[in-house]
Image: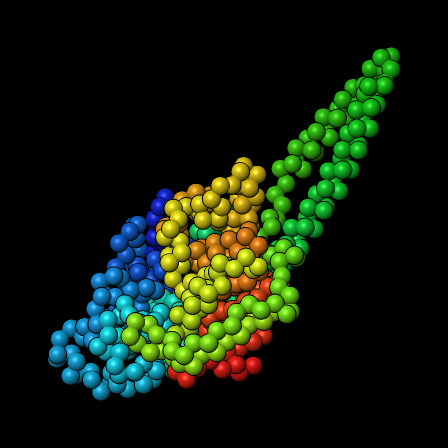
Length: 501
């Protein structure tokens, strides 16, 4: 159904993809993974044929099949449309698809009244659902999905998994949701940018995600062991050779002038040793594997909240966005260093509630708040570059320390010094996490903290948050995050907020 041959994408003085070839047939589910900014979304755009930057070479053969594309985020023109105008070109389209429309609305848990609303007024998850709805109505044979799970509620995530598994369509998708990847993919394309993002590499295997991760980790561990063993042996040879050379050098310095033959032999021996030294220096050792996902960050041990510390108490009779009533009778009390998460259907007001909590407690002097909004630019648009966000008036030592932290989070020099607006969403997410570490925040308000970060880096983030001794108040549909980090789970619906575990 889809054939790609020798596809290369060159952008910003480097290759994002080089000589990529594959065939996909009915029922194939290809998951594209990799660190943020590596070109995953760019590849989908190239396949769809609407890439507006860089240069593309190679061939893309759809073999007569229709292709549908779910973008990671809608452009402004579409956001200003009503859902109806986005879904249908004319009345003829509507009447031919109306039965399917209401069937799909029910399947993905969208109410009928959403049709008349402007897309810009919808929640993040509702926007994704509208994009999926258009794909379903257009009935394409090949589906390109860029982060289809972003902000989706758990019931729709489960529906999406069933759809991907059961459809005969070719599905190519980018996702950071490890559960979705594990449950649906039968092919993995891993895109990497190595050596400070100067060299691209891709790995394509017809295996499931968990098998791929397991194979990769074993290969990395083996290469590390081989590299370390070779370095130990190399050092032993170096030390032994150095001792022999020092001994010969000492003999040369102490040999009697009356023994020219002995001096000649020592000179010859030293020459042979230096040749041996040169051969040793030219030895090619197995390198420690160059991988991207080994991010490294942690909070200081003194960043904590005591068990009896009152963080927030709220009693909200009505949760409103404009004139729209989202939920009512919300009561919430957070005490101590709990790791709390709010789940619920899209559009019920979870992000709105988190914003209200931030407004209520952000100016307190007895706690240090870190807030990650659903839309990163709500905060980041006020800053021009990375350092202005991380520290406004840092001295030289502070800047040096921040550079070290940025390096540990796998920021390149260009990302450190460039505009914040040019960073990928995943890189922006890591920027928030780093800000929280540098500021010593002991209360974190996190709206979908893992949704834009590579699935290969997310285990590190979950581990850090699990071990965090402060308070976490979060909104998430990431099932791995809920399972491993959260110890207090709430569900928000129209009738209020209820603790379920």
